[in-house]
Each structure stands twice: as C-alpha cells, then as structure tokens.
Image (cartoon, rainbow, N blue to C red; front, side):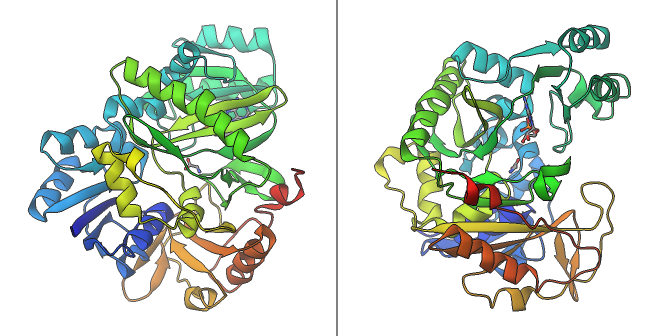
Length: 426
Ligand code: AMP
Ligand code: GLY
C-alpha cells in the first residue's frame, strides 16, 4: 500500500533518507520538515521545526502520514515518538525513555555497567569540587563530558590536567552547555580507531548494518576541534563479519535487553560509537538515531526498499525481512563552511553541485543549504559528496574529484577521508 511519509530534520542524513525513500515503489507523498535546499528536490519541504512536536503531530494527522521518520536526536529527547504513538501515528524512532541512552550519557554509562557492555571506566559527578578532586587524582589524558545533549560540543578530550580543569569549569561553573552539564561524566581516555555500528531494532530483534567509519576532527590527520563528522566510509574492510557479529552479541544485544528489562524497549536505530582499543572494542557513546554522515554512505549501498525496513521496525516484524546491500564501497566527503565548527558565515552562494554529480556514481547530499532564487549555504556542514565503487580507493577518488568541482567562499573539507582504512591491515 502507498504511504505518505514525513521525514523530520534538515541535514545530510535527512536528504539521504529522502533520496532513498523517494525510490520506493510504495512511496506516496514525501515531506521533510523543515528540510534543506536538497530535500526540496526529492520531496516537499514543510516549514515546521524538528522540535515543534505539536506542529508535527498536527501536520501528520492532517496529511494522512502513514510513517514518520525522525532524523535528529533532540525531537527524540523531547518525546516525539511518545506523542505520535499516543495519537495512533506510526513513527520510526525510540521513545523518550529509550532515547535516554543518547540524551543522558550518565544513564548510558550506568546501563552499560549493569549490562556488562565494555566501555571506558568512569565516574559521574554533580559537584564541581568532587569532579576536580577526581581529575587531580587520575591525571591526564582524561575525558570530561557534559551528560546531556550539547550539539556535539559537550565532550572534552583532555591531553593535560589544565585542559580538564578548564573543561570542568566551562561545564559546571560557567554552564556553557546549560543544564546539559548538570551532570558530568569523567572517563578514562581510550586510544584506537573509531567505528560506527548501526542496528535496526524493532523492539524484539535487531539487524546490523555494515560497519562504517566517521572522521570527527575538522582537520586532516584527526587534528583540530571535533565536529559533527567530516566524512565517512562503509563498509570498513578490517572489521570482519566475525568481529561485527561479536559487536552485535557483546554490545547491541545486552544493551537492548537491559533497556527492555528497565521498561524502555528500544525501536528505531541504535548506533553505538566504538573505539577499538588494545584490550578490545569499547563503547564511546550510544546514539538513538541514524549517524550523519554515516547514513549518506549507507544509503548508497542499501539494496532493499528503505520503506520496507522502517515499517518492519515500527511494526515489530523485522525478523521476516531480508536486508540486502550492494557489494563494494561508499564514501562521503563533507564540505563545510569556513570557520566551522566555530563561527561561520551563512548565505554564501554555492556553485558546482550539478557538475559534481556528473562524476561517475556521485550523489551530492545537501546539509546546510537553502534554495530560494539560488543555492546558498545555511549551516556549518554544507554538503556531503558521496560516491560508490568496487574498491574503496575508487569510491574516494570519485568523491574527491567531485568535491573539487564545488565552489563557495571559505569552503573546507578533509583530504584524508578513508586514508586510515586504506592502510589498516586486515
Ligand atoms: P561522544 O559524543 O561521546 O562520541 O564523543 C565525541 C568524540 O570524542 C568521540 O567520537 C571520540 O573521538 C572522542 N571521545 C569520547 N570519549 C572518549 C574517550 N573515552 N577516549 C577517547 N576519545 C573519546
Ligand atoms: N556521525 C556522528 C553522529 O551522527 O553523531
């Protein structure tokens, strides 16, 4: 049966979701709220903010939306899934209680301890003086995290004690992350490569997506400040099928079981970020949603109808579906505004997207763009240039060839996306 679908959010992830859902033979009308300059090319943008839960419920009821898909974390933390379900509306994503696995790092750490999921050793603090005493006792390197949602800026990886002291005073005394910093997690520094694991969950079972790798710091060589993510590859060759299976059994399964045991059954997409340490994989954090830019790589490789997958997750019938992927690799290179992740200009005219998409296999997903009379920048991460090929090297070459054709004042991107994976032995 045809379904009208509403996607919530405005990033590259949402453009990729819209691009893939638009290909479903069962798609009816496709809406994105609020969307961006790319989503309006494959769907209808609706000027309702992602956090306007009442407005979104009303829109879904009025427009006979058969399925709503939540992109970002903040509507989940506000309870959008609970609100939709209370009105009998089908929605892909976890309830507010289940989404706490992302919106409260303190909750996630305690849950991991109880479920014996491997993670960095940690302590949780409500008082600045106690946290300060603890970091002095432990020394650097050490990691200080605001427990709540802080626009990806609440994590301080501190190489020195002075940095940790500054982090604690910013979070706990200056309240730069507002009440997201009421609780603070101080944890052991973990060394190793990062991997993104994604699992579709229907509340009873789960299915893993291929492993992906994001690149968080702004500059080549993993230098500079952390960002939302500057580029991804999928799959990651050195993560074998056996390793992936182990992540499923030792990380995803016990986490889902512990959430269910606590009355917080999880449906939607569970995304643990892992660090591959010398003593095995450890969870850095959980996200309760699709990763961005991971999704921009994943959806280039997905063969199965995404609408079928999302519906089986919502309906609890995921076990009945076989999910298929194209062979080969996908890469996504994010092009960001000058200055990002700090202050940056908006409204800068942008050229070259059509030319970039003429490069073989390339699709350009929009993140921070708007389209009125012309295409302009409207955010920090502006575009995700994705490409596929039989080999990772080829996919990366294509993405970079296309990235060079994009032009706007101040633009920046990393030149080493996927480089680590190309040189890691497997
Ligand atoms: P999170 O939002 O918790 O994933 O943290 C953002 C980024 O900070 C991660 O992707 C890591 O690069 C880094 N990070 C977080 N926790 C740790 C840790 N315990 N050790 C080393 N790096 C970390
Ligand atoms: N890939 C980073 C994130 O989605 O949080």
